Length: 232
Ligand SMILES: [Zn+2]
Image (cartoon, rainbow, N blue to C red; front, side, top):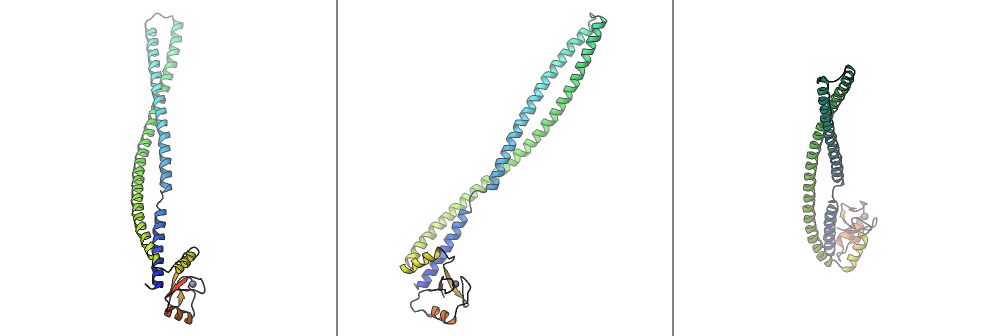
């Protein structure tokens, strides 16, 4: 194989490997979705504990309401059994009025708590379905990334083998020169394109171009402007 063609093919393989490597590196887990998931889980947790608080406060209030009712019933029986004197009756009536007020206040409070509980439950349901959707999408994305990563790794393995075989076709001194250039120039090899260097786009003297095209040994020449290995 013509040394310049061998070098150019090696360069094309390196480009293909770099592209797939970059694609594989870019497959890291999407941090935005992971953060959103964590945030949603936290909101759901605090909402669940709020729902538990509301429910237990409501239960306590209902017990209190029940004991108020029992007390009222007892006092009302005393009121109607006719064994009290007028002064005791007045006091008892006062106590009953106060109990009635407490009872009404507590009932209102329980109603408010029930509304609060309903709104918390609604919010919980909505967040829960949002979380499940996001989790499903996240899981699908993780699977998809894993599949793409496996495919890229398989392609890379084939390309690396081909690259190794191709490198063996390039003269050792030229290969060393290429590897050195690769560390500082991207790409390290360029084609002569319409009289300019395909790497740095500087116009090349006609005599230089002619020498490059007709080189008997088939060796690439360095671009006088950028130092890239030029092939016709
Ligand atoms: Zn150049």
